[in-house]
Image (cartoon, rainbow, N blue to C red; front, top):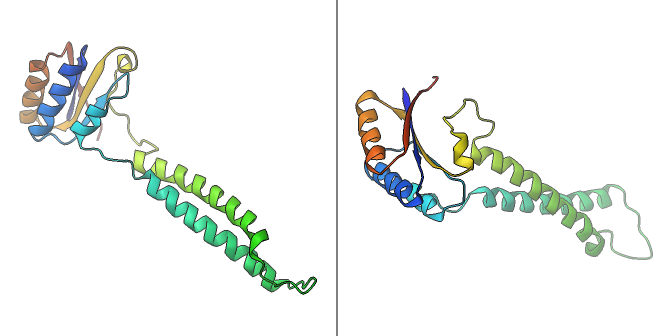
Length: 169
């Protein structure tokens, strides 16, 4: 299979090519830009990141486990002091808060790695100029007949340079 890499000097041409490719039925499109573009996210149909759900789940699990740990410890090692209740909530809130933060951070990191596909098991086509001053479109996994169509769309949008990269299976 072949990957087509098109380099653009102007943002408008880059976004026009991406929209045309998406509307033509190409699904495996990557957009590389030297600056953040909300329009690129709209073209690809990306919404809000699901990483926040991992953070929420981690925070809830952390709070529940922190409070449960405090209660379990108090019930296993009963130390009655001054007629107070064995399970006293205010001191447990500190441990609950710390466990909420800890689990929230751990689940956020795991969620980020899961959502972003890390570690990358194979290299994707990349141009270093995408970090400096070029907008790059990568169309991966094209068959021979669709390669020509993708190349004509990218060339028609005003690409400065087009490369064909053979992908490893």
